[in-house]
Length: 130
Image 1 (cartoon, rainbow, N blue to C red):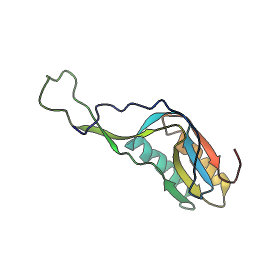
Image 2: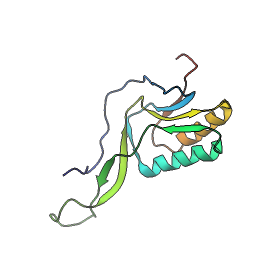
Image 3: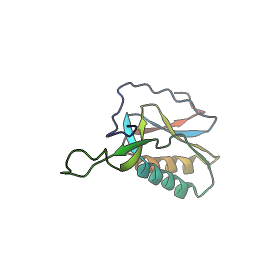
Image 4: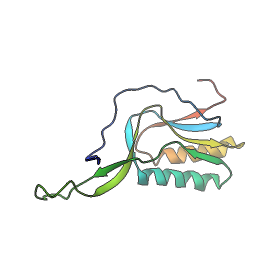
């Protein structure tokens, strides 16, 4: 069966962001799992704070389906329906990129989006050496 019962995270770790020529990006600093609803709320937060003045690139997409069966259900009768869609995030994964001339607006938008996510994140500026 191609469905996942639960999503497990990875143990490997390296922070080496490669940006697509954009100015500011939000990267993950922990290994975790993000669901489709968490991703949608982070994207909505960015769009509300920037008011359409920036070019937004989302580098992640929920691609793993996670199934869940009801509690105290007897064995047999298949695997169970899809509960939610998720994406496995490794440390160093670029989540979102924003391109604009107004750095303050993009920083506040990315910080508000990071509050919606279940793991620690970090802002990266392409023009600043790390």
